[in-house]
Amino acid sequence: MPRFMTKKVILTLGLALILAAGGLATASNMGFKFVKNYSAVSPDVNTVSLPYFQSQFTNVQSVFNNIPGVTQVCRINPTEARDCWLGDYTGSLNFPIVSEDGLIVGVSAAITQIVVGSHNPSLALSLNNVAPDINFKSLPYHMTYTTVQQVFNDITGVTQVCRINPNESKDCWLGDYTGSLNWNPVIGDAVVIGVSAATTWTPDHY
Image (cartoon, rainbow, N blue to C red):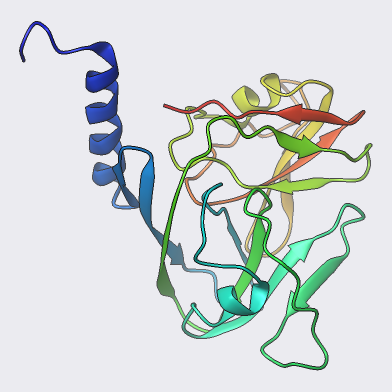
């Protein structure tokens, strides 16, 4: 490798290799083409993160129409109530997509979906609800977190960081080392965050 190659170039190359090796996404500068795998079949659920910059989806109907065999696409409100698009036009709320917020997806068969977009490194995620209310947030596709403890330690005033399992049970890190499972964040999955007071959080990334 040439001696004059900068650390920034080396880091960019390393990121591309990491993403390509994972079989999940490819990156060009800060743009992504992400392959989301849906393996949990309804009534089980999948969680989904979107790129912070994306124009592919404007409302939940556009997400629904992009996933073969989808049965529902939902958002989780601060009270943990859900709004779900079920493919109809009368009984479901066609809510707007907020890219920093996670989604819940149900499918009838294991499939994949292509998601494109780019990262907004200056975006501070809004964590506006007081525990026990929750925030359901997207993580960057090039996040640096390898454990939920690292996510927890990076958020001011956090009370819990949880993943939603296919059967809708939760694994939550509560800041301790004995009563919580220190699970590993997965690229493309969203997380549930509880905070003790309104704050913002800018996730770490490569």
